[in-house]
Image (cartoon, rainbow over all chains, first blue to last red; front, top):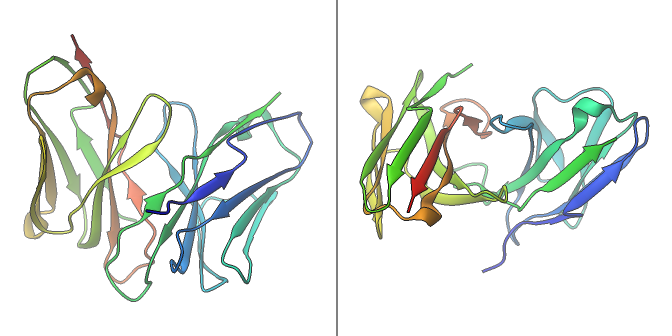
Length: 114
Length: 110
């Protein structure tokens, strides 16, 4: 079965640089979520999209922005990177906002800021 | 917001032992999922279980929604079961985002 695809899997950036993470949800899933997981921490919700519109927002820094495109893939843009942004970034998708549904996570992008 | 508490925070077992992990939550939920995060960081879906009982091989889970807790049972543990087990919930009437507990770190020794 198709899974959530994230790219790249690993990314190394210097402070103050910009990074773009991509997420391709499971086909026919219309909701996408982004999470950030610091070392030894639980995943923290950043932002979500339903049918290409932002549906909820969590603890996402102003330096970060995200969007969902017409083909339902999503991108998380991170600017002015800081050392503290080093983390595992997950994208998840679920099939139907109107029902109780199961979320599936991608393999994550491990971002290291040096 | 909803609070999710998992216990124990750490668990060390010998291969072949059984264990029970607990997840308490502070509000009514319409989604509860258990995940296993392996040493490579991958979050693997174990159960989608907002209520009731499910079994999958050596793993089973029970959620008692009225009492706001869920249990994950691991029987005949194997070294490959090592990792962090997360419980995550989504609240009724809220957005569908999952709120995670702090996790239980399981180490299974050979």
